[in-house]
Image 1 (cartoon, rainbow, N blue to C red):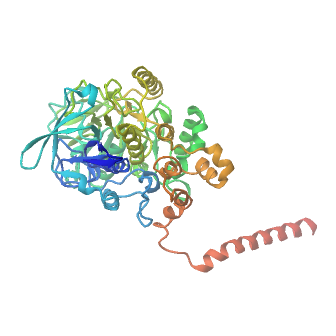
Image 2: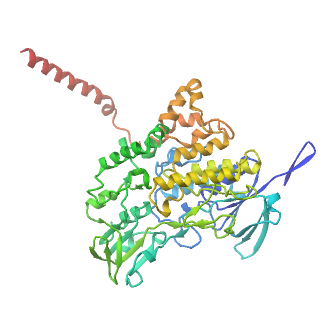
Image 3: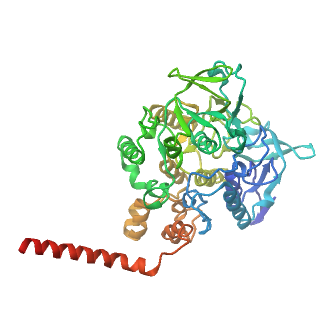
Length: 539
């Protein structure tokens, strides 16, 4: 496909997008924004990726449980030029997230670029790759037909919640255990655990969620953790979304030690982590915290019992590191996932214990041509959707030739520096190999595109907006205020975001006299106290 300009045919670059989840949808839209031709391959029959709940479990796709609710609020997780409807709940059930993706796809007419029920078998460099940057993509359709197609660029959007990490070698005796064991990926609902004694291994978000939900049906749930965890709420002070209050630019100026102290004080003011068997030895920002509103309630009611790591299994029991023994019927390993790209050769992207060498977590630095990128392979303390979108905005401009990557040496130096900082700060774990700080990383990507908000300039030209950007939530709309992809409604959307937060919860208005009389009544009581005090002093 090409366009005619001044008598010269300019060929439109064709871009293969692997996966039609939250990252893949953003990539389709960004390709269209840059006049690239996207072709998206999706192995299932619908969009949504991880958030497309299915009862059946397959090895090759992500899987979620039926009750799953996202940990990031709607204003912080939406695409930057398409706010989530104001009547949607702040923390959405997976079905509502899928609805939002369909709204986004319909609004920008994205579905026609997706080939459903099509699996990507292999992606390989063409013989002339060093000069053309082109790739051969082999796909298999629902009728088992193979097809090979040439593409100018590749966007990999397969996520990192597909291949379950099941470290059975770390748990001696599991092969003798006569009960049932499973990975959290296989979990769909709690009813099959009715009356059973269950141990959940791992205290990430999935482990916490499963322990809480199963505890309402099981005879007893044991939550086993090697290190402990800091547990945060979705709901913060005054009933507002926590990420709207704490994901703010002003906090990025605090030293990590100070920010950790404040966060630890905040979560301990809700419940003392040491008294609940949860307090870790590491600081708050040295491990991905666990988001769970119900866990302390289940612990205090005794339905969840926090235990140390499992040292060994017998035929019927788990022996923990503190030498306590508990009879067990079911073991659930909430032990995370392995990063994998089975359709790519290791010479293109090499994965070693979840370590992937990518420039700014996106580009393989050693490629002769920058025509392949990995989108969404990050673990932020925040939402993945706006990050994937910014990555896609940057990458498509690189594909189009509007942005350039630095030299290989510069990219490798940046990569090594980032790995060093993360290794120094975070607990050594497969989970922390792709960890990023939400605002600094978003700003870093935004600088590559030229869309980072200029606070100094705004202080003089639009001080109200500057105040909201500095002290308010760092919502995705901030990256549509200026530069390529500027959205005319970005400023207005920032100014109205709190209205959209409050609307879905304010479904009943207090009686008029309650709203209007509360302050006058307080003033009357204060006046009465002052009068009584004066009488006491002067009589």
